[in-house]
Image (cartoon, rainbow, N blue to C red; front, side, top):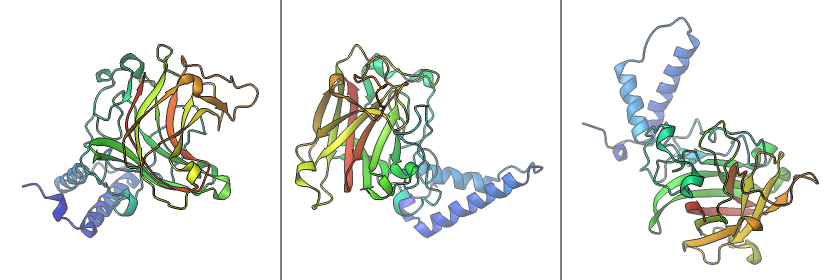
Length: 298
């Protein structure tokens, strides 16, 4: 009979995970060893994967994540998972996602369908074959931190939830969820010139009552192209009018403004060369609870 995850204590899960990590480390250090994992280890690993303690279903804790929308334009790996993530921010909040491998051939590129993510695939995968990543300013020495997770029923729909704290310390100041757009890793960009812009379903909750009233509900969307330099992107600031309510926001490509690329950066976004898109809390001290329930071209 399968063990009920709810009946297993955190201490037991921590102990089990630690033993598996020690077993893996020992095997890696002995290069001449031909020993294979025993049945007990395999069963333990399968159980931890099933409940989301390890594997791709685990929440994206990016307190110390490396890589940023403001960094390299190259394709980046998923956000770093917290190796101690069986407690605190590393625990799955919602459960309910499964790490099921799908071949690239089973996906269709976002510009073909118009859908970047409809959240029908297991987190962190997008429905167009890429992965969501949570990213902070720590790559540049900042102190912002947070977590990106999937909620299965947030005010009636599935959502990716970006939650954390933006700090301006050490010249930092951003927190974001981001995904690449090309389905094929060898492609530099996608051509969205047949569309007028980006639309998304968004919800936020007021966490900090001390936030400046004029900025409450204000967040950014950033788009990068193959030619944008480090810390450069095309940006648009949008405002969510009502907290705790799903809202549809549309942003025409013409509304995005060049930022951080200097005089050589084209001032107008070229919709035929889109590489990466992010939803960002940026530029002021704030607690963030921001949920995205769908992302599309229109």
